[in-house]
Length: 143
Image (cartoon, rainbow, N blue to C red; front, top):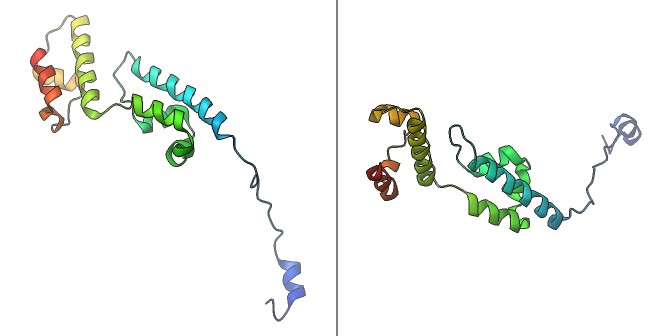
């Protein structure tokens, strides 16, 4: 069309769209400080939940803080935030131990003596590979 009828093509082309904020530079240091504080608060909230425990994972932090793209793909520009996330992340083994402790406290407060099956259901222990971990076995012997 450009070769044969340039004028017609120019009349019928849609208007060009302006790209927004292309040249705008972000202040990553300021963003890092703000996100760092939000992540710290989110981690404290997750640790202090009195109902059934929630694992402190990147997905859960992102759910509470937002800014998924920054935390997933721009984490190298957010060193303070990344340190706090790494410090607070909870491996599966530690999360299972926290669930067991929570279930133990629950049954002590309700003044009930559960069977092993009831205890596993209350603590939501379904990951049988984690039952073989040394920390978990040691904890179960203490109970």
